Length: 355
Image (cartoon, rainbow, N blue to C red):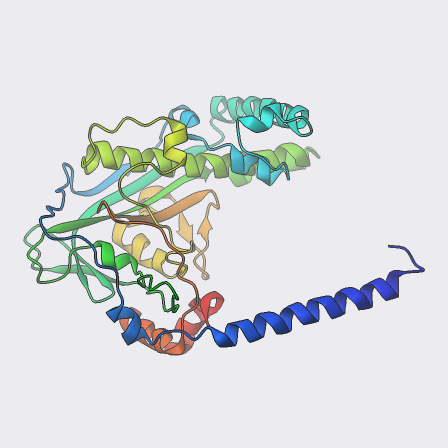
């Protein structure tokens, strides 16, 4: 910002970043990806021998409308809330931080007050739908069936596989690996869900913005987002303990839930293990989510209201999160064929991960 040194400083940083770009490009060239066929041969060895897939206590689709937001308060992870306001640190330690503590406590007090206001006034509503379906793995596809007899295919969902080449010989994961394979004789199940805590959030924020209160408007959006994530956490707990009931005796506090110290995972489209947002279309169709929750998908598969979460439920004890990383053109073509779309459209959905 100094007029006397601006040009020199700008030239220096442009040169520095050009060097970084070149180094990054050269490093990328050295990391050759596996072919998709090689990656599939290098899939993880999941322990299926002697494994008995848990059968849900309450299979099928379940709808929760007009959900009580007060039930979600204990499940809120406040750490990302403070990050929204550019306050680094973890909750609750941040409240006692020497530098950020005073501001964090003020924000927390405001958040609690506004949350009370939103709930008391009925300005936010929450809804959810979840489903548990008979399932099997067919290659990298997840196949869901209409009934326990598994005679009629309900939906076939393509998943993506890691293609990175690991010096340590690590396996190449695909989410479908965590489901019993076709012909294994095991009767496995998989779940899907959509939750929202953002019904009414746009209007609630707009009212405060109209009153020239941008701070409270942003606070409404941040709180709706935290409630949606809390709803996803709450519902997953209910699935493990009640609907699927494979961990009926689970007893974890909120800190343990945030650390994911439970069995099973709930990967969401758009996150590292399944970065293709297209998968939301499969989930929404499977659960009739628009009708059941009031949540819709945009053309680019963003969810409206924004304070919404969609994803899958996997129960195998070895199921885990991972980052897909880069994929090559052979997987783009393969994914297109399995998803029933053009290669051009496939490349568009997978663009952030293309080699």
